[in-house]
Image (tube, rainbow, N blue to C red; front, side, top):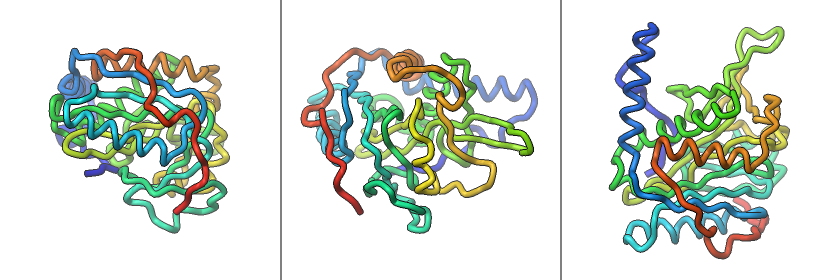
Amino acid sequence: MSICSTASIGGDTPQTATGGIWLTLVRTALNRAFFLDRPVDWAVSDGFVGYREAERAMERRVAEIRRGDAPELVWLLEHPPLYTAGTSARDEDLVDPRFPVFKSPRGGQYTYHGPGQRVAYVMLNLASRRRDVRGYVAALEDWIIGALADFGVTGERREERVGVWVDRKRPGATAQEDKIAAIGVRIRHWVSFHGIALNVAPDLSHFAGIIPCGVKTPGFGVTSLAELAVPATMDDADAALKRSFGVIFGPARAAPAPAECAVGENAAAL
């Protein structure tokens, strides 16, 4: 099972102040349904991790979690420059493949990964939390939004566009929304894997090689904490993500990164 879109919570989104409070309460209640007071492993890899290596490590850990042989895991890493094609990827959205392209079983379309982007692969047992895929994606979005708030950045969800967006208005433009974090997940036997990608300080020009997440509408782009003039380091981003994760999903404890993933290859393609 993979996911690349979300549904609205509770029908139409209310537009009044009272409705906004109601929606916040509903979302908070749904997020709490994913909370467990049982520490998950929290691992951070140094250096770059190859995409296929990361996939193999996730496959092993997902099987172990399902069998009850290992705890849940959040794995933070950086990839070398590459593109991934999710289950909904369209050939025409691969505009200029300047880096290797990898097919991925996650939901979604094309995205870019590379230095300066914090990828978090999230392996949680939803059978013991909540069997609700769309609710889980919404909880991931709220996790990122909470982390961004630590830097004074207002991240927002969009019902028809998975990920976290920053509402911006530039001179001469009526509207501008830029994606600061992408989400693509897969669920196997109610264990999640793949996860999120937060733009801390990547080279945003590399997104020009694709139509990111298939969004072609003028006025929608990509951004990062660095482009928003937030002087955050990767360690700063990690600390914010860990704090916000504790609110949405529960406590986390330091753990070693998966084996065989210290250095990654950058050499396979579609």
